[in-house]
Image (cartoon, rainbow, N blue to C red):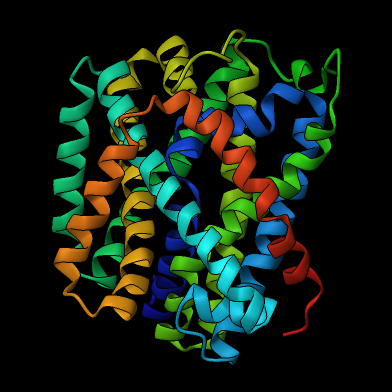
Length: 342
């Protein structure tokens, strides 16, 4: 792989790594937004994949073209400077809330799957995050370059094993007994929520890279990989019943169909939770540093300490209630991003 394509892949990996957070990697988020809706969930995933490819690329190109250095500047361009003050406050709360969910997800993984203390798992994760983030943007790029390919590969393996050992493909066409408006809104609220939050990482990343062709290729590749992982995870989750009350359904499915890969898969899930945690914390640090002028290490400690407090709440309810709520709040962002010209 030449240097140019390696850089393209790094951009794609950061995009995927930021979106595939605690809810995505564990499968909980995919179940809540898509899998529980049967065939409508499958169609929703196809639409969501298209939106990730088109609008993720558009967002990075806008940031580059208008030299927007953070998500506050991006929202000022998108919503106008007056409304952006209110929007940025909401997005800051969302970003802190979701970073707290990442921390809760890491703790839940240690507790539910490994039998360790939840608090111990979260403290270990916070310590590791401070170490990696001390390397700045290079630490973020490096860890995503390793974790994202592993996550894509393991999800495809899990999908293939699920198809051959469980129900096959017929169940993907099942129609749910009742369909709510939420089933139709899910692909829009899901992508709106994730794209709104990836601003914190993708906007400064686009400006720092500064190469239009590289950014366009990287964002497109990232969107394609997201669609692939969404689809493979949905197929795996659809092959097992009774996942509604399980916090980490992908691990449950792997333990059911391929126990010999279970331990390694837990490591990959933790890696994905971790990459999203540090991606969000990186975005928050950029904003807080602009306002406070404090050194980066002290801001990282503050951010992660606050997330440890949020992480005390159970992970499952956080995903079930916070994520859909944040999705609906973010719909205005998605609509404006669709209709505004670069």
